[in-house]
Image 1 (cartoon, rainbow, N blue to C red):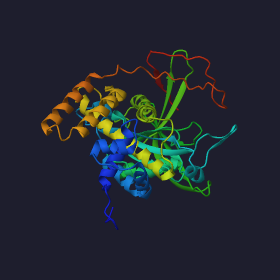
Image 2 (image 1 turned 90 degrees about the vertical axis):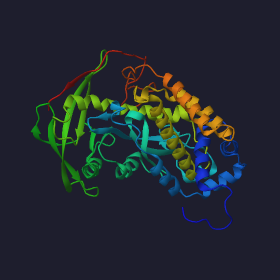
Image 3 (image 1 turned 45 degrees about the horizontal axis):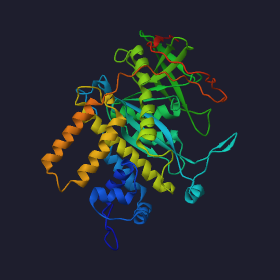
Image 4 (image 1 turned 90 degrees about the horizontal axis):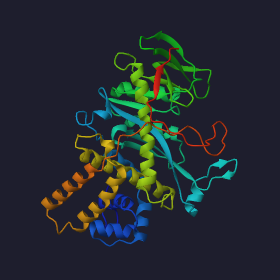
Length: 415
């Protein structure tokens, strides 16, 4: 961060950032209370607020680039991989902001047919390691950027030997073309759902039921101008559930050799993209303490979101340690692990001068043994119908909940 000018700060930046993450993770309480627990140092909430507002965003962006790293190992966690590729996903989520005067002045509320929304939103895109619910990169919309644009900025952080899954929000040529270039540069692949109405030209039909297609990338300013043409492999699959209408998946992938990834396997693999929605649920409903962010400005709200994302990465590491390669990482209960971590961190922080290093390690090992017992049962097939309770244009109305336990019947459709 460079040298500080003026009077030396009472709390160095590394300790301040560590305390901030600890504060948002620790549950109820003020920042001053959590900082005193962690470091044994008195620091007022007013001083902390001024310090946060003076902290440039680049510090948190760099912090996430350093902290967010892969967790799953190929030999210990085969569920997190497909062949030689690490399973990844990219998607966006929105957080509700407070109605403070500073936020009202900087952030606009969305409009609807019933008027403006109750709270302004801040969009965030996350590049996620699916098999561990571990964030690898994040882009936060401090300037009201869309989820699509934020996800586009994450392509530069896509690492090698990964298989990126994404929903049909990103299934367009303008996103796939730069993604394809990045994948070729780092030896990764992608599997994206696209809309039925997107046009493509079939160039070759393959034995597994898929086909190679060409897609035109058009100029943003002039849609009649074709900038380039990319080649992808298209997979069409029919999903049938007892008592529900049939759904059709249209997928584009950069894996052109059908022998390396048959169409049936890719269609089944795409269903794991739903893990990112479960990660967002953990992040918003089980890790946070309120429906809205606590921060009073747009900049500090972005800092708060980054602290939540870093906290989720720390939890993913502890889930992997608790699994010990004996069970899938996601079988270790997220919420139970959080409830174990919070008192453990407090004991280690308050008793750092009372417990020896050996005793601290023994206590941590016992915590991991207890966490390994907190396993969730094998997850059932997704049973959330694509319906809403309130009538909204384009969506069927949900009148009663229906569930199923039978496996989904998947059939490859030849174009």
